[in-house]
Amino acid sequence: MSVNADLYIEVKNFYARQMRVLDDLDIEQFTATFTEDGSVAHPHRGEKVEGREAMRAKMKSMLPMYEGLVTRHWFDHFLIEPAEGDVLRVTYYSLVTQTNTKDEVHFFSSSSVEDRMVRVDGELRIRERTIHRDNPKYGRVI
Amino acid sequence: MSVNADLYIEVKNFYARQMRVLDDLDIEQFTATFTEDGSVAHPHRGEKVEGREAMRAKMKSMLPMYEGLVTRHWFDHFLIEPAEGDVLRVTYYSLVTQTNTKDEVHFFSSSSVEDRMVRVDGELRIRERTIHRDNPKYGRVI
Amino acid sequence: MSVNADLYIEVKNFYARQMRVLDDLDIEQFTATFTEDGSVAHPHRGEKVEGREAMRAKMKSMLPMYEGLVTRHWFDHFLIEPAEGDVLRVTYYSLVTQTNTKDEVHFFSSSSVEDRMVRVDGELRIRERTIHRDNPKYGRVI
Image (cartoon, each protein chain N blue to C red):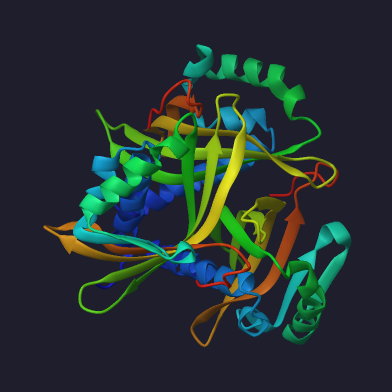
């Protein structure tokens, strides 16, 4: 895929929708934005979850961490680049905040993310997501 | 209105300008970005202010809260969707920070916003703004 | 230059790349995104650094402030406007965060920035950057 203005905006819309369902803790809709064999890796904790089924189980196990809070992901500095075959490589900054019942907003994390995206039946889907947590111990990645 | 790249960028420019005048506490220029009967609702406090005149009065009464601080609104995850008639429905995340005289930056609030936008004499204007404050007590809205 | 969707996205890509190399403390690559006589001014501390050579020296002297932290610049509310000759005037909000070895994220600063950008051999380069630190003492600038 070559990256013209229409594709740029389609990709931005993809993330706008994906973050709404993620921050709404809608595990079904969130995992549906990945390919069936899609994966999410957190290299800083040596973790890679592969396939929608495993993603659903992992997310369910983590729900208690997110209860009683409104979580929001804030993205910036997108680069959308054609990669091998019909893959799009999308990289961006990600800042996560959480708001509690007292209206207090706190930082949760700062990361950079690398996605590999493909089309399935015309729709953009993530095949591989790698989340690099910001921490000077790990070094900078993107 | 169908949403092509030019309209997408026109809408982003609208918000870039609207936030400059809001964060500059320029009540005249800010209310001019709404239609004459434009409204701003804060459902979490059961408030809806209707019409530029009422908006000006409300904002003047709130100015003391913003004095001695630089307020900044940070937006993300825009979705721009054609709605009934010539209305555009625009939804986005909104994070508000404030900086004091000691260069200290603090969070003020985290919200999601839903705008209904129309053209008046060719220019985009907000007819209805609904600000959903993030708080797990209220549930998630967009 | 007139600002169509392609140029808008080219400018956004420029900043996405420039921030990666800045936040990676890559002084060589960062200064290469400026013209040879490019400048960076911080009016709130009466400072203007002119020319890549002086920028490199200044940045090297400031590196200790950034060691042991991951710094991230978050931008918003871009306005890209044709200015005199072939210059583009680009203004935006800038929020800077830092993450330490304990995964703690802190605010570093909030600013508004004004860049004057030109093409050199087809590539966008900054000729003048002015960083207006947010502080109610200095008043609002953009």
